[in-house]
Image (cartoon, helix red, strand yellow):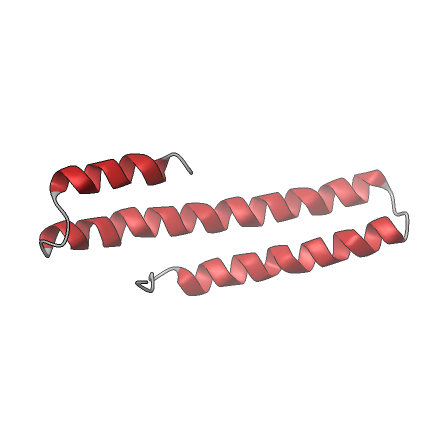
Length: 89
């Protein structure tokens, strides 16, 4: 697998989400307020969405373009892959 230029940023976002998830479990066990828990869930959702977006954009900007220019992938195949991955945005 190709290392994307954004992998370190994606990892940072996912680790942040992991920390939020851990705190949500603790909050539920401690019977904290639903508002507090919902706020933490929103933070997890946001972190994951941002990580996914960064990964997809990097793949489109670098991997697809590079594959076509290096002759590893036809333009038609790159377009199909672009359509497939853009569904995750």
